[in-house]
Image (cartoon, rainbow, N blue to C red; front, side, top):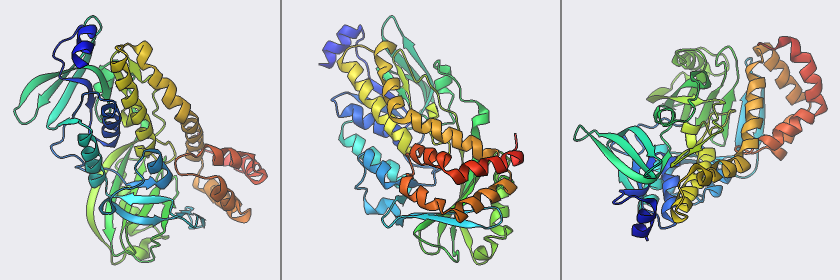
Length: 419
């Protein structure tokens, strides 16, 4: 079959049918679903060991994992199986909770999660090429061939990999997508985030994530505490301020709401990463190329998370890439089916979350206090429990905007907004 396809495409001795740049969870999911259709798939990855370094908080919804077909993760990957909801704190310490009786999310070890996906993809026949730093990806329309130029970090030599279709799943740091003709995500859409793994924390609820809001402390985002045990947690912060690590240290050491809980604590690990907020690309296909995951800005504007939403898009990308091989058509006319399908499933959610993030970013801390007062006094947390979902947030946002108390609140806080 491949000899026939190669002959029709006008290309001989291609090294893979589909080549994927990036072996994170999005790239591996795309590869897995392409390979399941009998397509020869290769992944080029800069890192020597998949999953390291780890830059993710690792909070993944149970519903989202089920959508990705990953609802039966090995137990060693999961650090906490008991997340049932979240506590939200105002700048002054007002608090309301959203909690359900059943588990809503898992806290996972991202390095082990990435390696698990690699093993699944390898069983399906995917070839992982590590220590390969991709420099460029060019599609030759005459020969209908994609050539990926990369640096072999072990041999310190430049080499090439040829394929019929490529998928860029290289995350947020690389400029491969821009160099390949896709729009660049503006630097204004990125926040720098820092996270600590902390032990010996007091007054920690293993069932509840904590979200601490303050546009003075973490403008453009929030502080989170994600418990991994009764006394340990992942504590992180992102903001428009640089360096935001100063704000995270301030939170742990000085913030009146939590400082007493960290008196005996110790930091076991520190790491950082970039978070994309409202960086969604609308055009994600071209001749012989697709772009997915963080590289396409397919992250939630509310939380910056992208494993589930990017995983959904990456799965679609892998299937469409494989279909293009089987249909002997790697033109954009065929590959833009990917744009249609991921937008049908995700675009309304992305738009709703972007609008919500835009509103929250314009609330002063004084306005945030009024928001919390309204939510607490009108039992709006119950509405959020009824309608809310970690990954599908459009329904709850629409319900909130129609609530009479929220409409009155909007009038009250309008003079307090910052633009």
